[in-house]
Image (cartoon, rainbow over all chains, first blue to last red; front, side, top):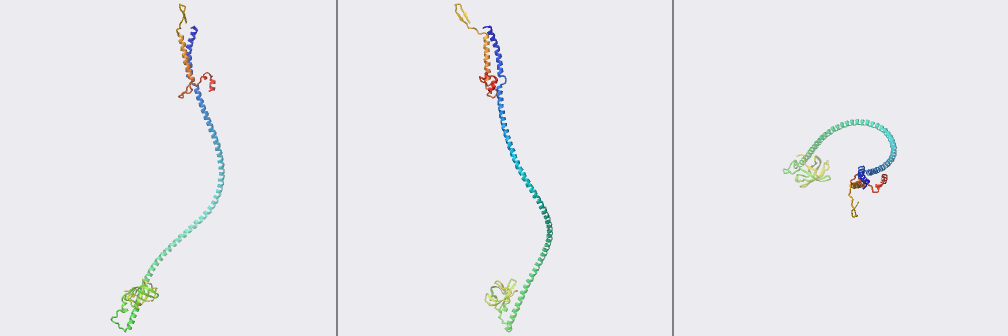
Length: 280
Length: 74
């Protein structure tokens, strides 16, 4: 081996490690520009996509804005028409209000007049109410007086009826006594000892009965000779407290009799009472 | 190397390795290791499997291109 070869070997042996260290340092320690480049490229693509999206959104927003502007213009025109219409309505309403104000004033005047009339009517009503109250009080007094007079009249009528009954009774008694007197006068003033069944003797018993049938002025009764009824006996027909008529007996049977209605005051009807005297 | 004996025969003798041979072998080994590490760095993917920065992702032909050509081609 020559000396030159030895020198070259030594130089290579020295330079190659130094170069290896330098190369390894350059390739491994320094920043990876390729990785940084790709990162930046990706970021740039993202930014480009974002910009595109933003641009689309911007265009969309501009379209919406234009559409909104057109819509607003249309609404503005509609509102303008409505405003004109409302202004016309307002003018008409003001005119109507003015007319109504005039009518209201007239009505207010009428109401004032009516209120005055109402006040007058109220005063008249109060006065009439007072007069009505006085008339009612007077009517009440008159009613009380009428009731009292009616009571007196009833009492007087009852007294009259009782007096009439007494008068009839007395008349009947007088008539019976006259008949008895006439019969005594005819018989010569003598009375048979066993003549107790004569009408005069039977008059002492009180006979009571009821009218059965009424035919014109003829009526039948439900008492007969068994009860003391005799021919030509004059019986009193009455209804309650009222004198109806007298019945003169023509036919006598044991349990019934019939006779002619005389001294008629009322029309006898079946059910009327008969008696020979009113008082026992 | 040859050595001539007394009988006229020539015997070839293998020379002994010296320090220079060792230095040459060491230099060659260092050079190979450096070449392997550099190529591994240059030709591995740009993004590693875990998402971190990897190598430069260059092909064998890219190793012989200029930087401008490399950027324009990418």
